[in-house]
Image 1: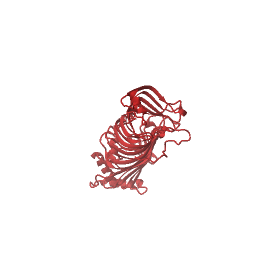
Image 2: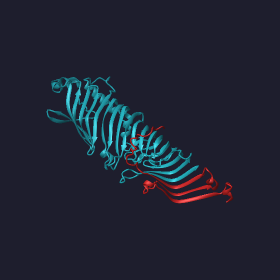
Image 3: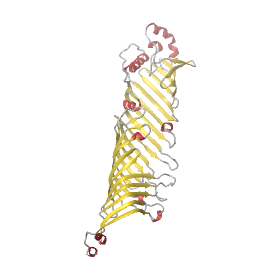
Image 4: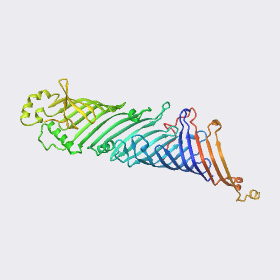
Length: 383
Length: 86
């Protein structure tokens, strides 16, 4: 045979468990150019992928046919995946383009390639941040399992790597997703632009490490996702001048220099260690710091009812009397000893409760909680 | 007949077939290939030659069904197979 032209082909890969759905590939057009008996064939093919919906063009070599184990028939080639609409997946959107190479057998392929989503976005924000990835993956054609070898990605200007697997275990009805994300030096505005509406409110560098697990449950992703990790924001500066002014003011007071205008545009630091499960985000630690002040909290944020419950400490370098000037400073010297504790000029036990839009800040003193008026985002100092 | 006996070329036979099913003897209940429509043309003289040659084959509606590996065969993932050269 010199040429074989095939239209409307289907490759069905049967699972070992007969109760499971077979894995199926629809091939709109397949052109084979046999080289000779017992030799591989050249092919070029045109596939329609259902999820994400898109169009794949592939060419390469196929065979020789393994009659004893057809799934072991060799296959290698290149592919172009165009205009795949990620909008079919919950929570994300964008049009994916991917090119790459693969080699292996019909049932097990090692793929290497790159994927670009120039208009990648999360539905919660709608802000577009270009995403580029370079990946290597092992694809088990018998069940669609994918094992990701480190994927090198760039989100905006932020580089990160991820590895893990998307696997359907024998007794599970759905896939389990287990990923590890490592971002040693990310650009904070890239992440804020992706995750929040409007323009980023803060600049800075971020170190983010997390493990993401999505178990094979029937519930929605937001209900079943498990996150565990740490983050550390360095050199954070608020991009809205009013907020940064308040942070500068906090730092001036906290250092006991309330009139010193040279304390300006101070850097904020933010770090935390978190675990999200059953829609409850537990912060094992959450710390915020500017020169002269440090807030250390631990607690929970319940995503189901939008409730915060954090307890911790506020430590200031300055004594209470040093945060104000004039006669107020003289008067407050009397109470300095009450707040001078554990090496801090001012030491307070604080509480943050309420919902995320309207957090209530309080000070725990002598076993009671007193509300603290704040103009926030950081605890304010009244003077 | 002359074409055949004198091996002269030019006698073209067109073959059209429908609903072709190919099974492996050990997996008779699961057809390996099913073809809805198949057609090809062949020069009769080439059939009698030592090297049989079909220029082109057209197939519409091909289904290839790959059975699972038989018991005792390793699963496809993780791959322990031959080295993959891209």
